[in-house]
Length: 420
Image (tube, rainbow, N blue to C red):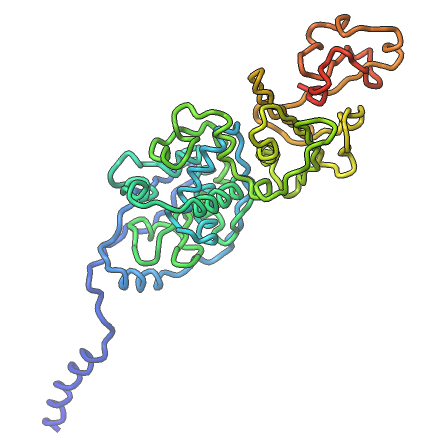
């Protein structure tokens, strides 16, 4: 009996040592206890700092953290405001974020883009897309997206086709596309690292090797994402190599060329009117193409022509096949673009009753036509108020003279489509 007890005393420790699970080789620093920040207090945004774990131990630790119980609602669609320059800057900042954070992976890129949008809507973060992406980039450590402060932008480049795909993902995200799986996540990390802030947030989703988190309590709920986003996107000097929009003083033409609407980029170009050189009449698919895509398609259509005009209608039943336009066709016009380099003119206009514009100078003015009997009376354009005789615009008249279109002999026929 004594001998058996002695053998067990020796064998049991040996068996425990032999078959016990491996010990974590690095000490995991104790994270602070989870604290739900009340709605009256803005949650702090922790800098990026990691626990000292090797990748295998980090994966094991992350796998042991459960997903939070309860719903994970999808974020609301987001549509970026601003002029073409501001939108081009935002698109390129977003493209850099999704490309450097997720690589050339469309699913991962969509997830990263959704986090950027969630952050710009949340009062704890900057209120521009570029501000969110490059938050903390001036520091060597502590930036929110590591590629902005670890030299990756200068050290690693991407192919033009990869930038194009990233810009398409960015454009979609900034014009209403939602990546539902990550909900209202404001934080994420790869599964081979463990950030210090991880234990204070709710783990809500996994996409590939990335884990996504939101704040606990009210700050992680949809009502918290109520901030008015600013369209005043800053110039990011680090992106000047990749983006015309982030160079000092970019031209409007160069900036608009940076805007990528995938539908506008793939739409076959129309045929020039045989009866009117440099004139094009288009049917615009407003369900698939963004309003800014109209301008992109117009500039593609005009190519390098010095003089060009493009007119588009979103109603398939309204586009004419020849010029001049009839009053009903002008009234139904959705978009127009006129380029006249000899006069230094290059302008796109939208029908703002159909497509709202942040810049009202991009809106067509409502058309008002002279009645037919006034034409027979011999009324001359010079008799109209000066404000209604804008060069290159359809002539308008006071409200008392509503009716059919006047056959103006003073307005240049080549520009009669354009209503300011």
